[in-house]
Length: 381
Image (cartoon, rainbow, N blue to C red; front, side):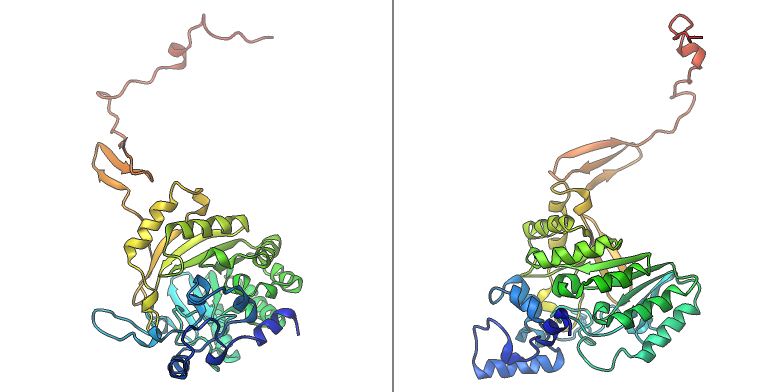
């Protein structure tokens, strides 16, 4: 058994083993058990060691609370177990075909930690959802649809699949002529970095072009072990991007988010998305206002390099796809000018290009008229 497998096998999966609970009464623990019957627990022992106290940003991401059962369905809230209507866009089980040229293929439904805010809380941690048969159907679907040029492997976490099985899946996909890009969505490098081994990197290098969408939510997640894991992946030639979910009590603070983005750049990870939290049943206590995200984006712009400024997006409820949101930096625009505001709040005016006519434009001069014979530089012969 490899070290990462030992760390995973020692995961906390029972209420009795949860860390830093101020209320240790039997009544409270029994209520928490009701939560975990609906939404399971998993905190691997590496990630557990990074938690410092109750309600710290890492604790909030993985330790269940009674708030998870407080959500309710209503016309106003529209909280759903499948808020993005993934099931409605599944032509075959566990494959989402929403955009014309790309699909998302779920290769398992297990994770190194079970995030309490997960948009797929309905699936994660339960047995028998992703199988060899669903994988076969998914790969056959991609093979039979030549318009698909890009696949994202997701789940669950694809990097919890054993090396040989992952190699088999990647080999089958890479043998499809029209499939150009393979992406892997994973939280493993930030939550179980010991899984990134030389053997795994050797397998991944065989299947380029390969891209990784990583997931980081707080600067405390970036440890020496995580830096090593990301460097190994980058050295294997894999471009690394990061996705972050805006979460109340975790990273809904401009300084925290700025620190996270700067730390990501230092470990060779390009910040890509900040997501407004999905309207997932059991996660409403994590949602912030959209204005909070826009304020954070205002703070990032101008205070860190453009490389460190991600897109802020809402994954539209009901399956509308990702919509990018920007702070309102355009104050006015008309035929003559655009009035804009910079990151400091200063206002600038940018003139629109005017339509050139013989009446308002100057006639271009010829070279002969511009450069006289007297001023011309003589050529040496």
